[in-house]
Amino acid sequence: MSLTNITKYAILGALNYMPISGYDFKKFSDHSIAYFWNDNYARIYPVLKEMEEEKLVTRETMQTEGRPAKNVYSITEKGRKELKKWLLQPVEERHLREELLLKIFFSEHVPLENIKEKIRAKKEQTLRFLEEYSEIERHIKTDEYTKESSSLPFWLITLNFGKHFREGIIKWCDETMETLESMERIRSELNK
Amino acid sequence: MSLTNITKYAILGALNYMPISGYDFKKFSDHSIAYFWNDNYARIYPVLKEMEEEKLVTRETMQTEGRPAKNVYSITEKGRKELKKWLLQPVEERHLREELLLKIFFSEHVPLENIKEKIRAKKEQTLRFLEEYSEIERHIKTDEYTKESSSLPFWLITLNFGKHFREGIIKWCDETMETLESMERIRSELNK
DNA sequence: GCGCCCATGTAACTAGTTACATGATTCA
DNA sequence: TGAATCATGTAACTAGTTACATGGGCGC
Image 1 (cartoon, rainbow over the protein chains, first blue to last red):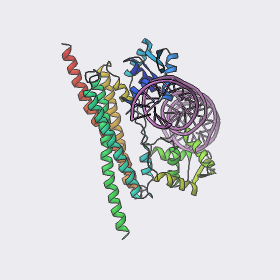
Image 2: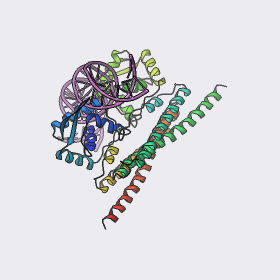
Image 3: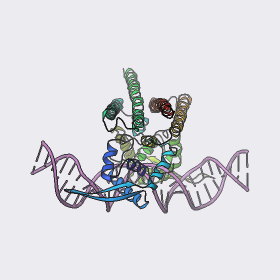
């Protein structure tokens, strides 16, 4: 897997709509792409600096009264080209990394109740994600700044990914609970 | 999210069954947990060294004729305790990171055919994963060394995760293709 | 003769997280 | 008075990847 500093492209994608600061990008990110791509300041600020050196963006310092100065970045022609090029390229699949599965794999001698507790927690967490996605969907379909956007169909596609992916996990949680319960019954039979 | 060097626990989990070398762990890993937890030599060897320093494992060098020497590691009592403690602890959820979704999110001006191609690739890749899981399932249910293992139910639970999770993605791919096709029809109507 | 397997490891890098530092304003 | 928000950043770390180095044995 070749590494490609994807944070850079997330920032370029946002700057392609309008000039913003690192702080504003974080806010934008938290409210839009965070559920499949999160970033933090410790990564955003250095990457913006690099991007300025690469001439993908230009920086302008804005003074506002009673507030710290803002470094507002704008995308350059070179930046737009780089973004477009990246958007057209195929995506490389990442490895799945699920700590929960690693634990279950080695759980032969773990009390079944402990595993069941983990599955319950996973299901609750997953249901919270699903609720969050519904809330976002409702919001972007009704908010006057987003409902008419020509990007709306693409945003809904990303939300739908979350929906199906999480629903698959819910099904797994339910089936796994059943499996664990029947294992419990078998174990208690053996102990009689 | 607190970081916990999970590779260490993957190795402890394997060593809990029997003493193995770093090279053997990699082979074990590739044939069992790789589909939800992959590791490579550049991580395994240094982690084994750290674990030896922490007295979680002991090392024994084995000479075999005509083969390079092997460093075979065994788990210690301290290692078993540490593994058990980790197994009982709750799991912290990781952030999803899906480059494909990031691209789609910003794809307003990307030709729909390009996006469709990405979805096709995703679906094919996902189907390959599903086939691989079926193959592993068939294998561990029939192989004489695994079919009677008391860990078998747990291995099947991890495989079932992959199944449901990937099936969710297949559904998303199918729905997304339909969405993109209807967007294409609308666009070609507008161009008439 | 070529490539793969066995076996261990290091070097150099990118990615990502947590904690820390600063200092003003606004709101409860 | 204290917490939250605005705004930028660095330091120190852990996690993870790729490329490189070594060298014998085995099968085609």
